[in-house]
Length: 348
Image 1 (tube, rainbow, N blue to C red):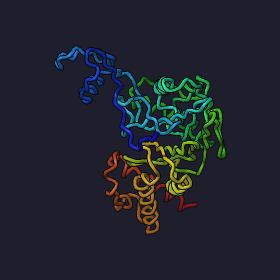
Image 2 (image 1 turned 90 degrees about the vertical axis):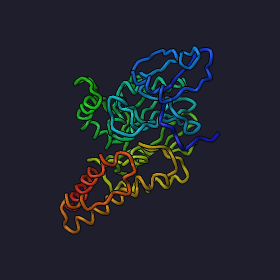
Image 3 (image 1 turned 30 degrees about the vertical axis):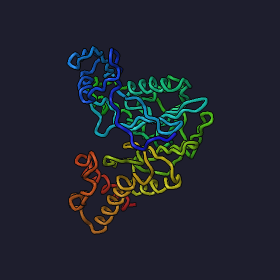
Image 4 (image 1 turned 135 degrees about the horizontal axis):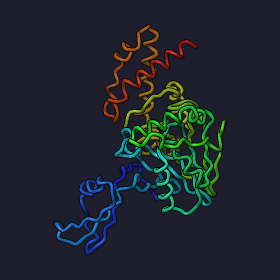
C-alpha cells in the first residue's frame, strides 16, 4: 500500500443516517454547523430528503491520518493557539507495534491528550507504553500526566527536561491566557520518567524507534525519532513547511542548520515535521534551512560591520519567505532573536 505525502487539515467527522446516506453535503455548511460547539441533529428538509446529520463539534482533534504501515499522525493547522482551535495547531504522531504503542508529543492540554488516547483506541487496543516529548515547547509535553496515568513512560532529553522544569509554570499560564481558561486550571506535569543523555532505542514489538540527539535547534536538544521499519523520521520542530518557523530563546540557529544537515543521513525517508505536511527532506529545504541560513548569515555580517540591532533588522530582506503563513507575525521577531544570539556568541 502507498501512502500520500499530501495531508488534508482535518474536517469534522460527520455521520449521516436516513433514506439517502450517500448524499454529499457541502463541507463548508457542515463546518458552519459544527462551529456551534455542540453535538446537534439537523433535519435537512430543504434537500428534499429526510436525512439526520450528527456533527461531533466537541472534538479538538480530527481522526489521525495513516502515514505508513505503523505510523499515524495528526497534521495540525497553522496559526497561534486560541479558543477556536483549542490549542491544536501542530503535528503529533503515534506508532503501533505488535506489542505496544508510542506517542510522539502529548498535546497542548490534558483534554487534548485524552482525545489522543480515545482516537488511538479506535485504531488499536495495544497499550500505550511510551510517550516521547521531542522538545520542551508547551504543545509537546503539557499532556504528559494523562499518558503517565495511562501507564506510559515519559521520555525526553536531559536538556529538554531541564527547560520543561524551568518554563512549565510560564507555559501553563500562557495556555490559560490563549484558551481563556481560569487561572491555575492548567496542571504542570511531573518530570519525565526516562531522561536520556545519548541516542536511545524503544522497542514496540516488530517496530523499532531510534531516538537521536543532534544538538540545539528550535530548542536546546530536541529528539529525532526514526521508525526504522517504515523509513519514517519524525523531525518535530527541526522541520517546518507551509508556515514561517519561529526562533526562540533556548534554541540556536547556527546549530539548527547543522542539525538539519544531519537529517540527510536518513536518505529517502519520509519526514514528519512539527508543523506542515510530511514529505521528503527536500520539501523542507526552502522553508527551514534556506530561511535559517538567511537569518544567520545576515546577522553575522551586521555584527562584523558594527551595525546596531534595529538597523540590522531593517536591512534584512525576508520578502521571499512572505508567502509562508505567520510571516507578518514572526519575521521581525525572528530577526531580533537571531541578532541577539549572534551578539551573545561574539562575546564568547
